[in-house]
Image (cartoon, rainbow, N blue to C red; front, side, top):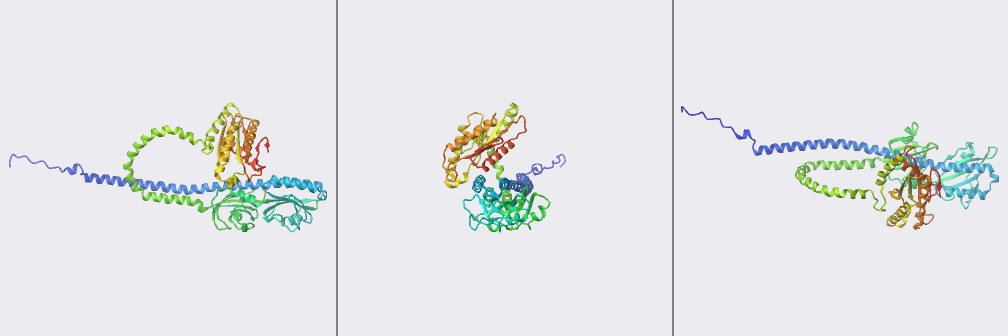
Length: 521
């Protein structure tokens, strides 16, 4: 035993290097841990995003109803003001001549002319002190023709104020239509009651206007008196007209302290919960309400939440497969990037062109308009814009079909393109049946000439339109000119100004252009 070396202790290799099973287990644990961390991070991010989207949905709804309320209030204000101005002028003329000396045929002709140029008017009427019809824009006077029993007549007979009065909805005795009476008192030279001058606005005029707004099926647009009586409502249900909103949250709690605002409330008419934007008119005792149903606001968010839940359920399976496809996807993307770069320019050009008409699209206008404003500012030149809209195009589509409507838009686009000849001028399809023409270095006279030429070119197409008063397709235009070097001009301001004059052209008879300097019929 002596002389032999003591054996060295053996070292287990499993202690120095973990076996494959252990390494696989560690990798598995690391992978599972990584997946859990990713899932938890995803849950946290998606939870925050879901809450953010919920708040954003209601913020967007509040902005939408505020804008709707503002638009409908302005429309109501303009509609009533036009009738107010007309009846004031007529009243002064009739009182100046004296009702006893009134030239009835002449006044009838004048009433017919005024009624023809105001689409909202159902009719104009002059009643004597006993309620007898004296003159109207209608061709015939019904029998018996006496309105002494009407609420507005009795009011003016017993009140001396000369302001215009907006009554509740009544049914016309001449046409059986639902109308809103807008009346004012007529006096004799000694100040005694001489009669009533009445202008009636069609309820259907407001119903048609409200029907053009894209809101959900449970949304609502309401025009009511300051006392809470409903004059017009979308959706239109005749039995609702005349009902009172005085017990609603808006009229009971908010209107007494603020003339405009946003409220979440349950409707007293149909019990639907909505986000309402309300606004009291500044000049007349009327209130508008615009409401989007809570269900329509939450529904997209709820669908998104459901999708997120489904994604979370499959997240682990997706993560397992994700690692295997990353490398192949990277290689694929590298091969695709070359093709994408070569096609990018072509796609960019296509993205700036309207596929139906071949004109530029709204994106092209947005990118060009800002550049032209900066250029005009540097050069001290003027910049003009024409906004066009095809008259009664919805009626055209309804009568002839959408295919014919597309052909009509293509023909109009061709007429516009042929009319503008300078390389720097830009014609775009702004959306739907709206077109915009941008005219750099063009003054008011030049822009008006271009607008006139375009409207004549469209009329020259002689496209049949059976539901148009002229029997052919026409367009209306708004023209605006700015001097970016001397005034603060933004793309939005220029578009808004042109759109305002387009609105004026359409509301003064269509088939014409309007600008700050002039208008053309």
